[in-house]
Amino acid sequence: MAEWEGASKGSLLGYKIFVFSIRKVGLRFSYFLLIFVALYYFFFAWESNKNIFYYFRKRQKFSWIKSFFGIYKSYYVFGQTLIDRILISSGKRDRFTYEFDGIENIKQAYKNGEGAIMISAHIGNFEVSEYFFEDIGEDFITNIVTTDLERQKIKEYIERFSLKSKMKYLLIEEDMSHIFTFKNALDHNEFICMTGDRYMEKAKYIEKDFLGEKAKFPRGPFLLSSRFKVPVLFVYVLKDNATHYHLYARKAEFTARDEEGLLENYIEITSKLVKKYPYQWFNYFDFWK
Image (cartoon, rainbow, N blue to C red; front, top):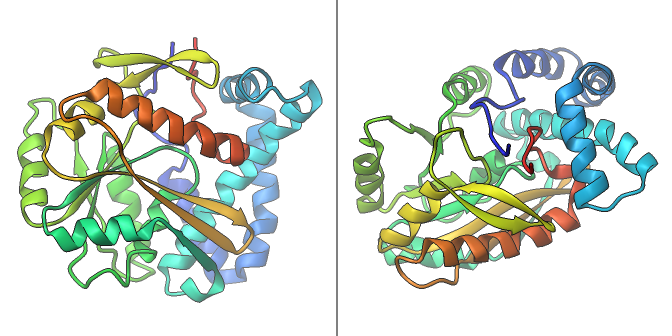
């Protein structure tokens, strides 16, 4: 089933390895080291290998050989995004170039003073997005919603060696108290970012066609986003090449209180980007049945 177990592959240990590598031997050697890290996953991560091969072969319609080697390329590009995040957050933003595609949608929402909800996906490197937002305003704050406790630990660890991040992490609580936290953040003109592509067991879901096959999407992000009376944006940060990142920000088109319509709009835009950046789809679990 398209279920996620609640943790991401970018573990704290992985960040520690790359922080040590970048600080001691630099970016080039870190990318070189990544060759062997990606090879380890390529040879030994059987379950995620099977899932990502299916994605390339059946959903992207790649050839068998392209799908097979695509597994390695996916791990390598994922590792690059981890390294890049560490480098950018350590004050070396000028090592990369940035393309702002739709940033005016975010600026307008911030100017309106009502806060906004951003829905993203596990493609690209959303966690470097705050470095696209630096010129919007001194008080511009993004809250990333997560179920993964390790994300906060990673943030705290990285900040020991880098610039202090304005991003905050909001944990989903079983008693639903996080809804009041969301409302408080929006009332202070803060932005809330959720991902809409990871369904967890026993959670409510909506089943929709995605890349030609039915998949389960979490209902929560789309239900909440369609109920709060604030702008909803789809935001992604993709890696165009070794040193260039591309921000995509699109205003959601849907009717108030229509979570299914919002999800359909999200799938339409996300599908186009997954097709354009096939190796930056970082969902390594069984997304489709």
